[in-house]
Image (cartoon, rainbow, N blue to C red):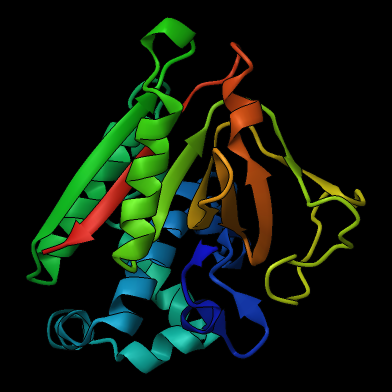
Length: 237
């Protein structure tokens, strides 16, 4: 398995990554999945790369250790919202806007950022090959970097056979937001963070979504002509 460190996503020893519902109503939390995904990725970079931690403190006035608390992470999320926010996440331009906003945030703390956007069209003859998607994710994970995924259609996350509501690779208790045993439905028009991949399978991804971690068989998602979306890789230079 190729996966990122759970420890570097852990907040107060109880939450994995951020949650858009931590935002107050003035920030429209129901529309904040994109900013939360961006914050997850940037938080991971800051917690694993000293240059990014120093830049956050020098240019934004936040210490990297503050990202390990719910209140500190929420303050960081609000800063990210200045660059990646709900008004930019519009139909047809969501991934482009996410990518552009992420670049502006990195520039605001004085750090260069490379990006790669991979669009998954609704028409299968216009989609990239599964191997191209797999390669993008594997290269990112090997480079110790999460990947953003935008889903534009309902998608069932299926856990490994016989697995209870736990991560099958590392025994981490995870929440099931839809109260279904063995299956979690990803919201339509929703951003999540890809934090791992099973290299032995075509497109079996480890997903972080509002404090929950689960595995997703994306090859099933690609087989449905109604599905579309995008992957965005953010790479610190």
